[in-house]
Length: 128
Image (cartoon, rainbow, N blue to C red; front, side):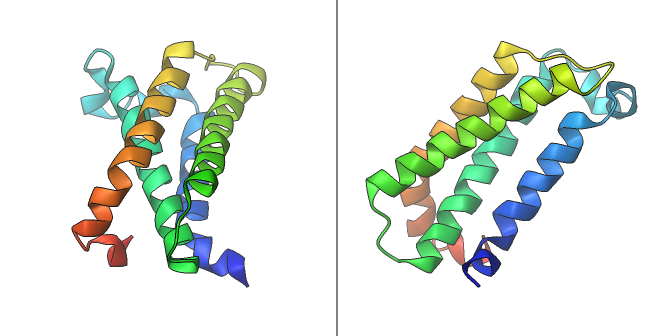
């Protein structure tokens, strides 16, 4: 039953997964994606949101979020980002693994890690 409390980060992780293994020709049909390096900003934002959603679910499950659990969750988000980059390399025909994408993923997750306490104080976490 505890997985039900994590439905938001799970759904968001699935959305990232689908976007990561989708054909790049489909993604290039979106006009704003023609901005140089916009994909790095998108990677950053996706993993920032994923981390905040994960921490929010953890917080709602147990209101005392100790640093060790947050660090383990952060490492899991890093691992998920690395896994998806490797999947792009192995599974897709027109996508490739990029280390800068992985770095953007990690930076977004790290920002989520550090900004989550401030997000809690804004009292918007009830919507997360």
